[in-house]
Amino acid sequence: YRNCDGLIRPDTKVYGIIGKPVGHSKSPLLFNAAFKSVGLNAVYVHFLVDDVEKFFNTYSAIDMTSGCSCTIPHKEAALKCMDEIDPIAKKIGAINNIVRRPDGSLTAFNTDYIGAISAIEDGLRELNGASPATGSPLAGKLFVVLGAGGAGKSLAYGAKQKGARVVVANRTFERAKELADKVDGQAMTLAEIENFHPEEGMVLANTTSVGMKPKIDETPIPKHALKHYCLVFDAIYTPKDTRLLREAKDTGAVIVYGTEMLIRQGFEQYKNFTGLPAPEDMFRELMSKHA
Ligand code: ATR
Image 1 (cartoon, rainbow, N blue to C red):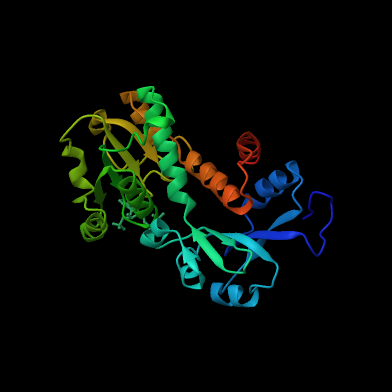
Image 2: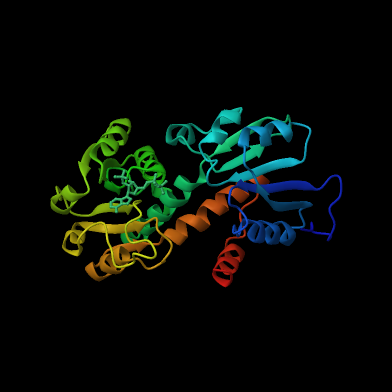
Protein backbone atom coordinates (compact mmCIF):
# COMPACT_ATOMS: atom_id res chain seq x y z
CA TYR A 1 0.00 0.00 0.00
CA ARG A 2 1.16 3.51 -0.84
CA ASN A 3 -0.18 6.94 0.01
CA CYS A 4 -0.84 9.66 -2.58
CA ASP A 5 2.93 10.31 -2.97
CA GLY A 6 3.73 6.60 -3.32
CA LEU A 7 5.17 6.57 0.22
CA ILE A 8 4.22 5.79 3.79
CA ARG A 9 5.59 8.49 6.12
CA PRO A 10 5.31 8.88 9.90
CA ASP A 11 2.43 11.31 9.38
CA THR A 12 0.54 9.07 6.94
CA LYS A 13 -2.91 8.27 8.32
CA VAL A 14 -3.60 4.54 8.48
CA TYR A 15 -7.11 3.16 8.08
CA GLY A 16 -8.10 -0.45 7.57
CA ILE A 17 -10.65 -3.19 7.75
CA ILE A 18 -10.60 -5.59 10.70
CA GLY A 19 -12.09 -9.04 10.23
CA LYS A 20 -11.42 -12.75 9.96
CA PRO A 21 -11.32 -13.68 7.15
CA VAL A 22 -10.54 -10.29 5.64
CA GLY A 23 -8.23 -10.83 2.66
CA HIS A 24 -11.12 -10.94 0.19
CA SER A 25 -12.38 -7.46 1.11
CA LYS A 26 -12.41 -4.93 -1.72
CA SER A 27 -12.44 -2.00 0.72
CA PRO A 28 -8.66 -1.30 0.45
CA LEU A 29 -9.01 -1.04 -3.32
CA LEU A 30 -11.86 1.49 -3.04
CA PHE A 31 -10.53 3.61 -0.19
CA ASN A 32 -6.92 3.81 -1.46
CA ALA A 33 -8.12 4.95 -4.89
CA ALA A 34 -10.40 7.51 -3.26
CA PHE A 35 -7.66 8.86 -0.93
CA LYS A 36 -5.30 9.16 -3.87
CA SER A 37 -7.86 10.99 -6.02
CA VAL A 38 -8.05 13.86 -3.50
CA GLY A 39 -4.37 13.78 -2.50
CA LEU A 40 -4.93 12.53 1.06
CA ASN A 41 -1.82 11.34 2.86
CA ALA A 42 -3.51 8.13 3.99
CA VAL A 43 -3.58 4.39 3.36
CA TYR A 44 -6.20 1.70 4.00
CA VAL A 45 -5.06 -1.87 4.72
CA HIS A 46 -6.38 -5.31 5.64
CA PHE A 47 -6.10 -6.17 9.35
CA LEU A 48 -6.56 -9.90 10.01
CA VAL A 49 -7.78 -9.78 13.61
CA ASP A 50 -8.55 -12.67 15.98
CA ASP A 51 -9.22 -10.80 19.18
CA VAL A 52 -10.84 -7.44 18.68
CA GLU A 53 -10.30 -6.22 22.27
CA LYS A 54 -6.59 -7.00 22.06
CA PHE A 55 -6.44 -5.14 18.75
CA PHE A 56 -7.86 -1.92 20.18
CA ASN A 57 -5.78 -2.22 23.36
CA THR A 58 -2.61 -2.72 21.31
CA TYR A 59 -3.29 0.12 18.88
CA SER A 60 -4.22 2.68 21.51
CA ALA A 61 -4.74 6.44 21.36
CA ILE A 62 -1.19 7.27 20.32
CA ASP A 63 -0.95 4.63 17.65
CA MET A 64 -1.38 4.17 13.96
CA THR A 65 -5.10 3.65 13.38
CA SER A 66 -7.09 6.70 12.34
CA GLY A 67 -10.22 4.61 11.92
CA CYS A 68 -11.36 1.29 10.63
CA SER A 69 -14.12 -0.68 9.06
CA CYS A 70 -15.28 -3.72 10.94
CA THR A 71 -16.57 -6.93 9.43
CA ILE A 72 -17.37 -10.54 10.36
CA PRO A 73 -17.02 -11.74 13.12
CA HIS A 74 -16.29 -8.49 15.02
CA LYS A 75 -19.33 -6.30 14.39
CA GLU A 76 -20.82 -7.04 17.83
CA ALA A 77 -17.69 -7.72 19.90
CA ALA A 78 -16.12 -4.38 18.92
CA LEU A 79 -18.97 -2.48 20.61
CA LYS A 80 -17.48 -2.80 24.07
CA CYS A 81 -14.21 -1.17 22.96
CA MET A 82 -15.90 2.08 21.88
CA ASP A 83 -16.08 5.42 23.71
CA GLU A 84 -19.13 6.63 21.80
CA ILE A 85 -21.71 4.76 19.70
CA ASP A 86 -24.29 6.12 17.30
CA PRO A 87 -27.68 5.58 19.03
CA ILE A 88 -29.20 3.48 16.22
CA ALA A 89 -26.02 1.36 15.93
CA LYS A 90 -26.30 0.76 19.68
CA LYS A 91 -29.89 -0.43 19.31
CA ILE A 92 -28.96 -2.67 16.36
CA GLY A 93 -26.13 -4.06 18.48
CA ALA A 94 -23.60 -4.02 15.63
CA ILE A 95 -21.04 -1.56 14.26
CA ASN A 96 -19.06 -1.57 11.03
CA ASN A 97 -17.36 1.84 11.01
CA ILE A 98 -15.03 3.22 13.69
CA VAL A 99 -13.50 6.69 13.66
CA ARG A 100 -10.65 7.79 15.94
CA ARG A 101 -11.14 11.37 17.15
CA PRO A 102 -8.14 13.73 17.57
CA ASP A 103 -8.22 13.06 21.36
CA GLY A 104 -7.74 9.32 20.68
CA SER A 105 -11.30 8.32 21.54
CA LEU A 106 -13.24 5.90 19.32
CA THR A 107 -16.69 6.66 17.85
CA ALA A 108 -18.63 3.90 16.11
CA PHE A 109 -21.37 3.84 13.49
CA ASN A 110 -23.42 1.27 11.61
CA THR A 111 -23.41 2.38 7.99
CA ASP A 112 -25.16 -0.82 6.80
CA TYR A 113 -28.57 0.44 7.84
CA ILE A 114 -27.89 3.91 6.42
CA GLY A 115 -26.85 2.38 3.08
CA ALA A 116 -29.94 0.17 2.83
CA ILE A 117 -32.43 2.76 4.00
CA SER A 118 -31.07 5.52 1.75
CA ALA A 119 -31.24 3.19 -1.29
CA ILE A 120 -34.86 2.32 -0.44
CA GLU A 121 -35.75 5.99 0.08
CA ASP A 122 -34.29 6.89 -3.31
CA GLY A 123 -36.27 4.03 -4.90
CA LEU A 124 -39.50 5.39 -3.41
CA ARG A 125 -38.68 8.94 -4.52
CA GLU A 126 -38.14 7.64 -8.04
CA LEU A 127 -41.59 6.09 -7.84
CA ASN A 128 -43.29 9.20 -6.42
CA GLY A 129 -41.27 11.78 -8.33
CA ALA A 130 -40.51 13.39 -4.94
CA SER A 131 -37.41 15.43 -4.12
CA PRO A 132 -35.16 14.64 -1.12
CA ALA A 133 -36.24 17.98 0.39
CA THR A 134 -39.73 16.68 1.15
CA GLY A 135 -38.65 14.39 4.01
CA SER A 136 -38.47 10.62 4.14
CA PRO A 137 -40.83 8.78 1.78
CA LEU A 138 -40.79 5.97 4.35
CA ALA A 139 -42.77 8.01 6.87
CA GLY A 140 -46.12 6.26 7.44
CA LYS A 141 -45.29 3.37 5.07
CA LEU A 142 -45.96 -0.24 6.03
CA PHE A 143 -42.48 -1.78 5.94
CA VAL A 144 -42.18 -5.58 6.01
CA VAL A 145 -38.81 -7.03 7.03
CA LEU A 146 -38.22 -10.71 6.25
CA GLY A 147 -35.67 -12.12 8.72
CA ALA A 148 -34.66 -11.14 12.23
CA GLY A 149 -30.86 -11.60 12.22
CA GLY A 150 -28.23 -8.84 12.09
CA ALA A 151 -29.40 -7.44 8.75
CA GLY A 152 -33.06 -7.72 9.82
CA LYS A 153 -32.33 -5.59 12.88
CA SER A 154 -30.57 -2.96 10.74
CA LEU A 155 -33.54 -2.65 8.38
CA ALA A 156 -36.17 -2.70 11.15
CA TYR A 157 -34.50 -0.02 13.29
CA GLY A 158 -33.60 2.04 10.22
CA ALA A 159 -37.18 2.00 8.91
CA LYS A 160 -38.61 2.77 12.35
CA GLN A 161 -36.29 5.77 12.66
CA LYS A 162 -37.76 7.13 9.39
CA GLY A 163 -41.30 6.84 10.71
CA ALA A 164 -42.35 3.61 8.98
CA ARG A 165 -44.74 1.09 10.57
CA VAL A 166 -42.67 -2.09 10.83
CA VAL A 167 -43.69 -5.74 10.43
CA VAL A 168 -41.09 -8.45 11.10
CA ALA A 169 -41.65 -11.89 9.57
CA ASN A 170 -39.25 -14.68 10.41
CA ARG A 171 -39.08 -18.47 10.13
CA THR A 172 -38.57 -18.62 13.90
CA PHE A 173 -41.47 -16.62 15.34
CA GLU A 174 -39.80 -15.89 18.71
CA ARG A 175 -36.99 -13.97 17.00
CA ALA A 176 -39.52 -11.98 14.96
CA LYS A 177 -41.44 -11.14 18.14
CA GLU A 178 -38.34 -10.01 20.00
CA LEU A 179 -37.33 -7.61 17.23
CA ALA A 180 -40.87 -6.42 16.46
CA ASP A 181 -41.41 -5.49 20.13
CA LYS A 182 -38.31 -3.31 20.03
CA VAL A 183 -39.58 -1.27 17.08
CA ASP A 184 -43.25 -1.18 18.25
CA GLY A 185 -44.03 -3.41 15.28
CA GLN A 186 -45.99 -6.51 14.43
CA ALA A 187 -44.49 -10.03 14.34
CA MET A 188 -45.42 -13.02 12.24
CA THR A 189 -43.93 -16.16 10.77
CA LEU A 190 -42.46 -16.18 7.29
CA ALA A 191 -45.27 -18.55 6.24
CA GLU A 192 -47.92 -16.02 7.29
CA ILE A 193 -46.56 -13.22 5.16
CA GLU A 194 -48.01 -14.73 1.99
CA ASN A 195 -51.54 -13.81 3.11
CA PHE A 196 -50.66 -10.53 4.80
CA HIS A 197 -51.87 -7.55 2.80
CA PRO A 198 -53.76 -5.08 4.98
CA GLU A 199 -53.05 -2.38 2.39
CA GLU A 200 -51.47 -1.84 -1.02
CA GLY A 201 -48.16 -0.11 -1.74
CA MET A 202 -46.19 -1.74 1.09
CA VAL A 203 -42.36 -1.95 1.16
CA LEU A 204 -40.62 -5.33 1.42
CA ALA A 205 -37.04 -5.94 2.58
CA ASN A 206 -35.61 -9.45 2.49
CA THR A 207 -32.78 -10.03 4.97
CA THR A 208 -33.02 -13.84 5.12
CA SER A 209 -30.49 -15.91 3.25
CA VAL A 210 -33.22 -17.53 1.13
CA GLY A 211 -32.23 -17.19 -2.55
CA MET A 212 -28.52 -16.78 -1.89
CA LYS A 213 -25.98 -18.69 -3.98
CA PRO A 214 -25.95 -21.64 -4.51
CA LYS A 215 -29.73 -21.97 -3.84
CA ILE A 216 -30.68 -19.34 -6.38
CA ASP A 217 -34.03 -20.97 -7.26
CA GLU A 218 -35.43 -20.28 -3.80
CA THR A 219 -37.43 -17.24 -2.77
CA PRO A 220 -38.75 -16.18 0.66
CA ILE A 221 -42.23 -15.12 -0.53
CA PRO A 222 -44.38 -16.42 -3.42
CA LYS A 223 -44.71 -14.26 -6.52
CA HIS A 224 -48.47 -13.72 -6.23
CA ALA A 225 -48.00 -12.00 -2.85
CA LEU A 226 -45.63 -9.42 -4.34
CA LYS A 227 -48.41 -7.45 -6.02
CA HIS A 228 -49.16 -5.68 -2.73
CA TYR A 229 -45.70 -4.11 -2.62
CA CYS A 230 -44.57 -0.97 -4.43
CA LEU A 231 -40.89 -1.56 -3.67
CA VAL A 232 -38.86 -4.70 -2.96
CA PHE A 233 -35.31 -4.69 -1.58
CA ASP A 234 -33.11 -7.78 -1.25
CA ALA A 235 -30.04 -7.62 1.03
CA ILE A 236 -28.59 -10.61 -0.86
CA TYR A 237 -25.98 -9.60 -3.44
CA THR A 238 -24.78 -13.03 -4.59
CA PRO A 239 -26.43 -13.26 -7.04
CA LYS A 240 -27.32 -9.61 -7.71
CA ASP A 241 -30.53 -10.57 -9.51
CA THR A 242 -32.25 -12.85 -7.00
CA ARG A 243 -35.42 -14.73 -7.87
CA LEU A 244 -37.26 -12.41 -5.46
CA LEU A 245 -36.12 -9.30 -7.32
CA ARG A 246 -36.83 -10.80 -10.76
CA GLU A 247 -40.37 -11.71 -9.71
CA ALA A 248 -40.92 -8.34 -8.02
CA LYS A 249 -39.86 -6.58 -11.22
CA ASP A 250 -42.30 -8.72 -13.24
CA THR A 251 -45.03 -7.74 -10.82
CA GLY A 252 -44.32 -4.05 -11.40
CA ALA A 253 -42.55 -3.13 -8.16
CA VAL A 254 -39.50 -0.88 -7.98
CA ILE A 255 -36.55 -3.08 -7.05
CA VAL A 256 -33.48 -2.20 -5.01
CA TYR A 257 -30.41 -4.43 -5.25
CA GLY A 258 -28.31 -5.62 -2.30
CA THR A 259 -25.25 -4.28 -4.11
CA GLU A 260 -26.69 -0.81 -3.62
CA MET A 261 -26.64 -1.27 0.19
CA LEU A 262 -23.07 -2.51 -0.05
CA ILE A 263 -21.81 0.44 -2.03
CA ARG A 264 -23.74 3.08 -0.13
CA GLN A 265 -22.50 1.82 3.25
CA GLY A 266 -19.01 2.45 1.81
CA PHE A 267 -19.92 6.04 0.87
CA GLU A 268 -20.95 6.66 4.49
CA GLN A 269 -17.73 5.15 5.84
CA TYR A 270 -15.64 7.39 3.59
CA LYS A 271 -17.58 10.48 4.76
CA ASN A 272 -17.06 9.53 8.41
CA PHE A 273 -13.33 8.89 7.90
CA THR A 274 -12.50 12.01 5.91
CA GLY A 275 -15.34 14.51 6.34
CA LEU A 276 -15.48 14.62 2.53
CA PRO A 277 -18.20 13.43 0.17
CA ALA A 278 -17.44 10.00 -1.30
CA PRO A 279 -16.31 9.79 -4.94
CA GLU A 280 -19.44 7.81 -5.78
CA ASP A 281 -18.80 7.25 -9.49
CA MET A 282 -15.28 6.00 -8.80
CA PHE A 283 -16.54 3.57 -6.13
CA ARG A 284 -19.23 2.26 -8.48
CA GLU A 285 -16.79 1.83 -11.35
CA LEU A 286 -14.21 -0.01 -9.24
CA MET A 287 -16.87 -2.25 -7.70
CA SER A 288 -18.23 -3.29 -11.08
CA LYS A 289 -14.75 -3.77 -12.53
CA HIS A 290 -13.60 -5.97 -9.66
CA ALA A 291 -16.91 -7.76 -8.89
P1 ATR B 1 -27.62 -11.89 9.03
O1 ATR B 1 -26.69 -11.33 10.06
O2 ATR B 1 -27.09 -11.86 7.63
O3 ATR B 1 -28.99 -11.29 9.12
P2 ATR B 1 -28.33 -14.25 10.55
O4 ATR B 1 -28.24 -13.48 11.82
O5 ATR B 1 -27.71 -15.61 10.51
O6 ATR B 1 -27.69 -13.47 9.33
O7 ATR B 1 -29.88 -14.37 10.13
C1 ATR B 1 -30.30 -15.13 9.05
C2 ATR B 1 -31.80 -14.93 8.84
O8 ATR B 1 -32.19 -15.73 7.72
C3 ATR B 1 -32.65 -15.35 10.01
O9 ATR B 1 -33.78 -14.52 10.07
C4 ATR B 1 -33.04 -16.78 9.62
O10 ATR B 1 -34.24 -17.24 10.20
P3 ATR B 1 -34.25 -17.96 11.66
O11 ATR B 1 -34.19 -16.87 12.67
O12 ATR B 1 -35.52 -18.71 11.69
O13 ATR B 1 -33.02 -18.85 11.68
C5 ATR B 1 -33.22 -16.63 8.13
N1 ATR B 1 -33.09 -17.88 7.39
C6 ATR B 1 -31.96 -18.57 7.15
N2 ATR B 1 -32.22 -19.67 6.39
C7 ATR B 1 -33.55 -19.69 6.18
C8 ATR B 1 -34.44 -20.57 5.48
N3 ATR B 1 -34.00 -21.64 4.84
N4 ATR B 1 -35.76 -20.26 5.46
C9 ATR B 1 -36.21 -19.14 6.09
N5 ATR B 1 -35.43 -18.27 6.77
C10 ATR B 1 -34.12 -18.55 6.82
